[in-house]
Length: 75
Image (cartoon, rainbow, N blue to C red; front, side, top):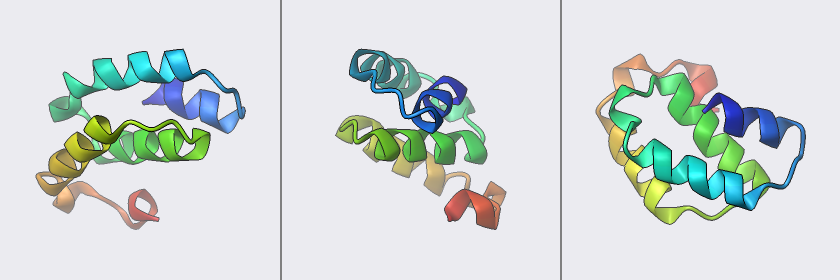
């Protein structure tokens, strides 16, 4: 989540890196905190990297952690 966020914040295009992050994240979403889920989605959306499987999995993971989200995570 932090790496994706950093690259997106710096406006660095790195689709190969983002694809690798998506693959790795899919296996670890159950341990992501709400902020990490939000940062990951934001980073992919900001860089316009399409990752529908990741977005669907994050949506599912977010549903199980709704009580942990703060307003800034949802903005």
